[in-house]
Length: 283
Image (tube, rainbow, N blue to C red; front, side):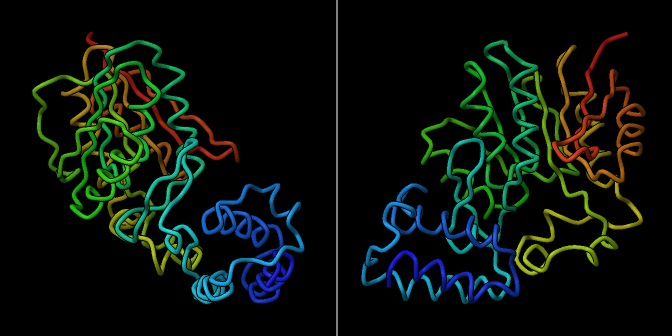
């Protein structure tokens, strides 16, 4: 099998489930992860015969993709903020929008030695990215899932980044020994009724506990996070949240009711309300 034949096979097998651009993008990722090729190699080595193991490996990947399994779970990793992070079905696949949240935090917090808390850390992508980018930050990540924390610790180790990971339920955040300069969270925020409009690769494979909240209580996680932030942030400390674009006013109201100030909403690169920030200020 040549490079050209491999890509042609992917296009033929996956055309009913993916568009051409998505297939070509996946082909580049597969070649990079399985063969350690760069995108230019696909062009330069178009007619080259691929290693003997590759056809069977590609057939296995295609079969799993046709069952709507995310490529990130198949390969066991996802790209986020310039680095590869291990992901498993115990963790969400990091999204580009969340990279924007990380960039916002970095841009707005140029100081050093900041105390940072990531609530609901999952794969640890936010916590680790902040620990790498902020100057001498002391970062803690919490999650209720021990399986997720195992993945997060693996990622921190692989990226040679020091983050303290702690098992904790978002709804039962306890006062810290230290006060935080920054609290960030990307909690579950999709209502159960929104499942009907979602892709099968998300519904069938990503952890529902990290995605969904009851229709009757969409602020299930934002409420305790806001209450905790109002106690645990330092004066002038900042809270950063990723949100459901349909719930922006409810999140704003929740933060204001908790006594947080300067509550603002920001859009993602698609123009959707995606982030809300707030500051703890003493009167």
